Image 1 (tube, rainbow, N blue to C red):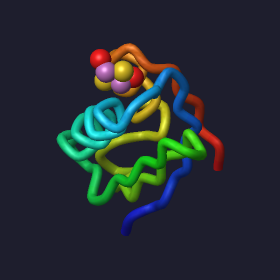
Image 2 (image 1 turned 45 degrees about the vertical axis):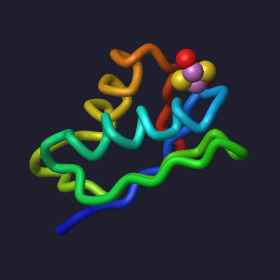
Image 3 (image 1 turned 120 degrees about the vertical axis):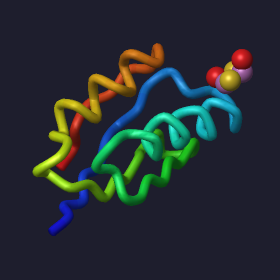
Length: 72
Ligand code: 9UX
């Protein structure tokens, strides 16, 4: 079964950044759904914890050059 995690994402300044982060997240194995909001700097990700961890999701965002922290 999936879990839903919320992430605070730093360094997004435009809509293209949002699309980029969403694209990164949606390509990750184990990620079923990802939505990122520019106004709040928050992302919500539905993921399979047997395939990817919340730390893995944070690492993928940071590898793309953004800051990321798991919220809850
Ligand atoms: Mo454009 Mo958004 O190069 O931060 S993708 S600014």
